[in-house]
Length: 269
Image (cartoon, rainbow, N blue to C red; front, side, top):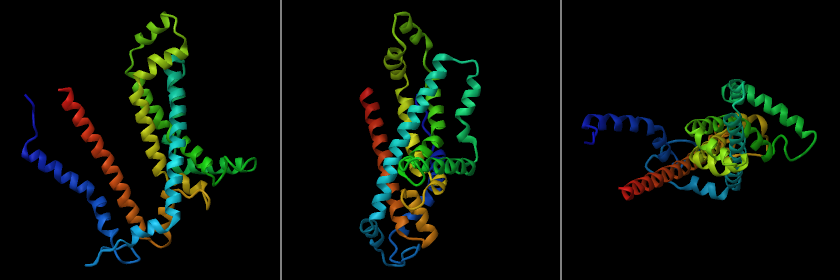
């Protein structure tokens, strides 16, 4: 017998959902204001701020830069997290707890401390090269990787904790090398954990603003930094327009994923 929620539970869930979504819903009418400042439309609705996103190339550059940095930093952070977690799981060193604590340090350290440390680090690198340096996309990607790698470590470590070690021991007993065991035995068992880490780290890099403000100036202007500049300088309503577009993209992805899971479950039955 399937236990279905009652009317009261559904009403409570709906009220909570509306309460949580109200800040996002409020952005939608603001994006259609005809005024040059953030305000609700007073009888007249306008698409001027959506048009401004198209006319101003800075928004397209910021969007492209954020996507590129997100892909690079997420790939690097997930790769480092995977290598670290696999090493801990396979070798099982004596000081595994200490090593895990060091790996998770950027997650628990105050963001200002991490931002200052990365700022001085990239400033120092700027003396030797112009690529991996302050106010470059590569420097931002490196800094983001440092900040988001602990999250990849956590997700992949949790996935590895659910893997039966006897599978790896059986492959080892049959003469499989370490590389073959990792490629054909361990990685297929944790692929969802790795994909989850890749997705989460991309999202964290995409929305990162605290560290980005310290390590960028005028060249590497990501989308969050551009939005922050618009809020600080002139409260540009185009920020509301780009926020609505991003909300729509996220909602579409969630809806597509929900429909795909529902279809898969229906076919499985």
